Image (cartoon, rainbow, N blue to C red; front, side):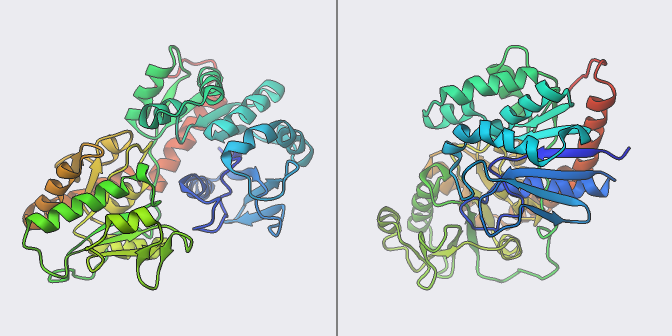
Length: 406
């Protein structure tokens, strides 16, 4: 059944360049899901904020997918924290720009877009599906930062939408703790790009290294990682070539020539280890895939992740992952099967896990093989798009049927 689908991704333009300030995991998710749904015979439009005035208002990608950009009075980059106030104008321009009655289903992404989705549902009675990408209650638990407006809005969305897409079982459980009687929930993970796959080149005998990919923020566990690596170096007689490679951060954060961070606190944290820790700056997906393929393990020491895209991508390359036992990472990484879980913020626990994979190659190779198999089964875009397409058909065609979630 061919469907005309509208994605609302207010702050996540799927065609925003990688490494730009408006680009993140949601952007790539929206793009890849749209392209994968197109292969199932659907037509997908993505409506988003017009971040770059040099971009056209309507831009095609794939064969029939389109991005439709709405200025909402500010045709420039606007931080997520400021987009809420633009939503009334955004919705007005949205109705003037596209014919909302032409769509069979609306799929909103993140709570800001979910509020817009609720407007469309109320005004046009179009079936509505929502993906959180992250939840305010999870952010509050991880950081102590509370956003009352967001929490209230998310409760409204989660109880009025036709169906919720959770990317992990952990997220589904969190929703049930947060809301007494949520709408039906379907768990459909996030897929990984085809660039992330095991390479055929041999890595035997190559210099060992650990890898990290992400923003250079405390909540991503960067200081926990650096401190753990220092412990690993101090407590073991490592080869001089054993390193830690850190990918992420733009030119304002990283001196790519000297492979050092510009942040004073981070520079202090790595003092004495400059010959072993390399800050690579932002890398393309193809470059990251090469890094992951050759790494002893990829480390994801985040304080919280709703999903854990880097962990999924690394496993797709056949690389074991050492990850904090938090949020979606508890589901994305299988402890002692595809990687190792650690306690968040515990540098001693992390150092021990790094030592385990570094000095037990048979165990590490087994983890890597299992990781590749697991990722291919769980994070395959073709399979995930088929599951999403089936969910859409249930929501569109069987709205009166009680939907039993998984």
